[in-house]
Length: 97
Image (cartoon, rainbow, N blue to C red; front, top):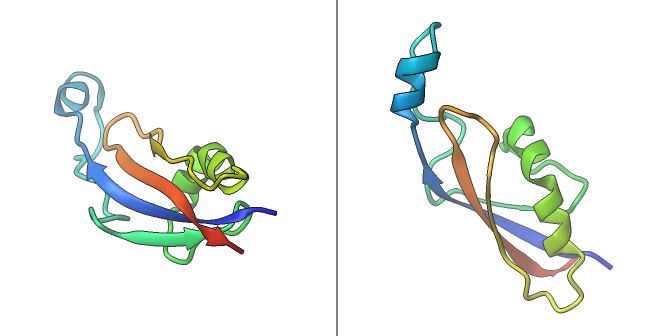
């Protein structure tokens, strides 16, 4: 049985050097989907309400690793794959579904 998972936004970054060198479109700022401290709960298959679908796809492997850990002790730090404005997430077990 899978554990419920808690996802916490722990950091947002802006890669200004990469933006200046490689980005030639509209200005890029920090991700507007999340704020540091935001918390979400999910299972391995359901997108949490208000969570970015792209980021969920990026971190779904780590969500599954935490959800299916029989000890409930595995934690992960991971981030979305945006090259310019990454969001970092702390993933931990939130108990059985």
